[in-house]
Image 1: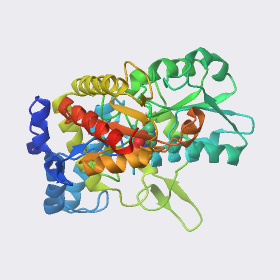
Image 2: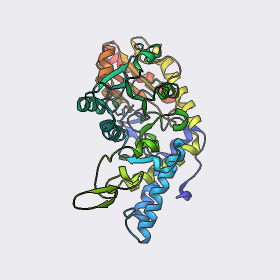
Image 3: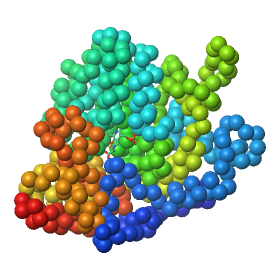
Image 4: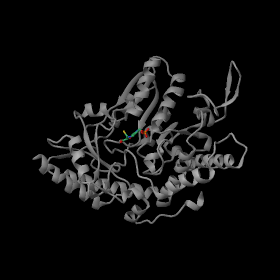
Length: 415
Ligand code: C6P
């Protein structure tokens, strides 16, 4: 696989050449892809890694005693070791491959939660959680009689109200599950500080890193969380592959989530025993190619440098925030400084869906809607926002294009 690792040029606009999909016109205009929070584009290196696997090594893992199966197993387990290194886990056994962030959180809520929660225990989330980090806990609360609480935000500036943390994070709290970066507000939450406070009270913690894993350096030991979940497709990897990190002690103490092949040590007609970590949580044939593509994506990102990527994200988001906020009739949600690489905004008298539909006619890929944050939208008294989300291959020239197109849309709607 290593021969596929090429050091990409550090010049941001030159990196665009690595992404075949960016070289196209949409409705007669050069594509401006600003929907990276939904999914990122894939560089040639990742596409090549997938093709190489299917053309040379395709086989099932952990089962065969033939050359192809050995190669596939080595590549799959090599990807697991790479993930452990990418997020500074103590060992590869703490890395469970999933389908994505959503499945990782469901796994924890189901397996850890059902085993550990009882009536009256508290589950603490925040008011800015994505449905994926909300609905699984709602169902868990219904199953166990536990109580759900939400740490408030300060308002449309989208910061967590940390002055209230002590009154929410109490002895009765069993688990705290929160997002690292809000996919709607662009807020970067101080997860290490909050997990530190939770640890002092013996509260189990889960971080939803869907929007952060591909954008900044993650260190699960420095964050001090018990679990962390993310998706490969938002960090240049394939869809259908994700990661759940869990501290060994936590994973050891949990029952399996799904059952079937590969996750067992032995099976009898009346009982079974479980495989060792992490295989206990990977029932059935896994997404082998996905893990291999994810490995290539991580190599690609690290060749660029995640610190540099985050700096670039923040620069673009700050620039977009300033330009959009100075436009008449536009309100940008979320913090005015220190935001991650996205801007969610409202245009007076124009529904977000209309805005995004017209923007598409100008070649701009934005997202409009509730962004799987319906409770947050209701709290803020809005129905939907338009969102531009950036990655390292985006440029200020593209943000200028967004501003020009928004000007056209405003004229069109007479707002
Ligand atoms: N947010 C967005 O456009 P999956 O679908 O499992 O890969 O990721 C779910 C998820 C969980 N948490 C956060 C904070 C997220 O942003 C997402 C995905 C996409 O914002 C699709 S709604």
